[in-house]
Picture: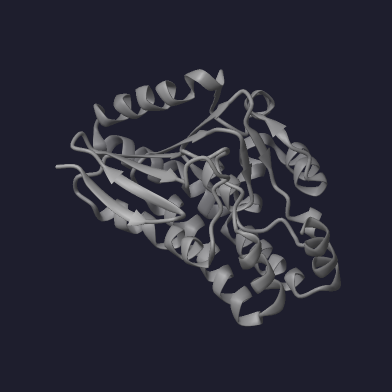
Length: 256
């Protein structure tokens, strides 16, 4: 029986009879963003799916104009103005990253258009990341005057090497889907019109495989990410520290 978990407006999760859980970012026709509630929900959804006996594969996709722009401006301003908000969001970021790493289910991301901030985190922490040619992956932290925290320190150097990681994280230069594949930041890049069918094909292939063998393979490989965990903890703390700085206030004002 198909089930729907409603976390609107940030996302919904549809669990299909075949074991596919589709985490769909929305709303349709707009750029998906996470408000405070949506960000908190993204922090709690991964263990929920991991414990669900019906789920075999998670596919993260968007019905919006892009994949996700991350936290909305109200959440960014709250972090700028409130220490308690910064500490809350740091805890949620930790839970998002750890939740995706510790979830033994294979996670696939289908990246259409821009993926920024928390959106880039979810896109790149997926076990198999598929980007449309016109996707635009951006880590925009330094542009608003804060350290590149959340997922960046734990995953970018392993995916594309330290030289490329430093370049893109320090400059906030955008990467197209094709360039992201070329440097190893994503698993595949395909023409935009083939993105949905490619993601569904790979999901179907994984569903038909051994749940235990695939899950244990992910668990073993992710020890490379766990080994980098101190770097993640440090980067997340420095990001939160920066949100209270004059540079962040100036950067956020410029973005607004």
